[in-house]
Structure formats: C-alpha cells, structure tokens
Image (cartoon, rainbow, N blue to C red; front, side):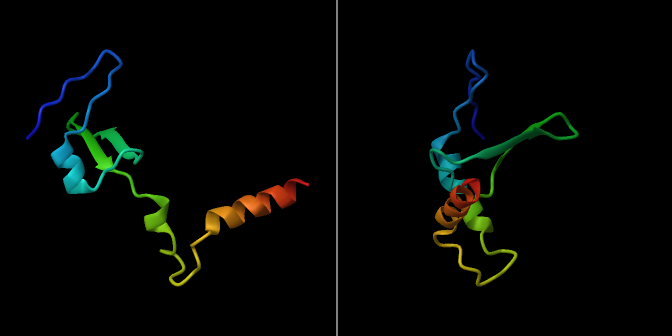
Length: 77
C-alpha cells in the first residue's frame, strides 16, 4: 500500500512501483472513478494500439492513423 499527497491543484503522483507493475508510462491515460463504496479507483486505460484489430483480427492497423488523416484531408477539399 502506498500513500500519496493531494496537491493544491488536486493532483496526485502515482508511485513508481505501481506504474511499473501496471505498465503505465508518462503520457499514458488512466481512468478515474468512484465506486459504490465511495472509493476512488484508478485504472490503466486501454490504448488504441491495444484495441486495434480486436474487432477484425488480421486487419492492417500499421499506418492506419496516417491513412485516416489523409482521407480526412481529401474529403475536406
């Protein structure tokens, strides 16, 4: 168990050992909510890279963001 202090801006710092265990790196997102027992829950958010291809296994996901950007630019013309 770790104790963390809440800053004036209501921020907390996640302890390194917890981040290491959950694979949370700088820039990652976490999900924060209150459960039915009024406890604060912090969970690692699933990234788009982990979701990519989950609905259509084998679908090409490498370069997908660039392809979508290009399609958006073309449709704006």
